[in-house]
Length: 124
Image (cartoon, rainbow, N blue to C red; front, side, top):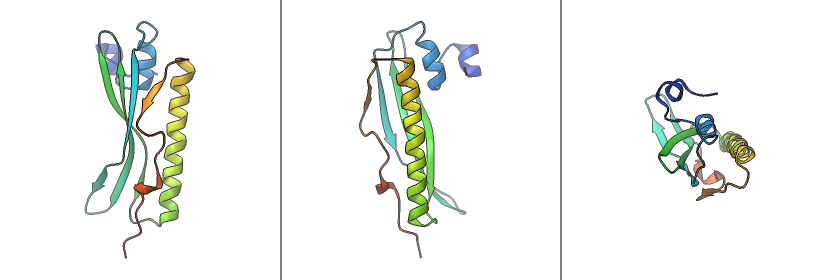
C-alpha cells in the first residue's frame, strides 16, 4: 500500500512505495544495515531491532528505517531471544517480499539476521 506522502509528494518512504517506484525506475542497488539501538526511559529499557534500507535509483536515493521488533531489557533472556527470533521472521518476510517483486536484485547486507548478542541478562 502506498503512503500518503508518496501519493502526494512522489517520494517513496517505505518498502511498498519503493516497490511501486520500481515499476517505472529500475533500482541500481539496495543496501540493508541492521541496527539495535537502546531506548531508555524512566519506565523501561528497550533495544529496538531495526533495519535501515537504502535504495539507489538513477535519479534519487531513498533511505528509510523499518522496525522489526524489540527486546525489553527487564524480561528474562529466553523472552528476549524469542523477540529476536520474531524480528528475524519479520525481516525474512520483508526480504522475501522484495525478492519476489524484484527477481535477480541482490540486497547488500552487512549481516543477514539479528543475533542473540543484542540481548542482555536480566538486571537484578
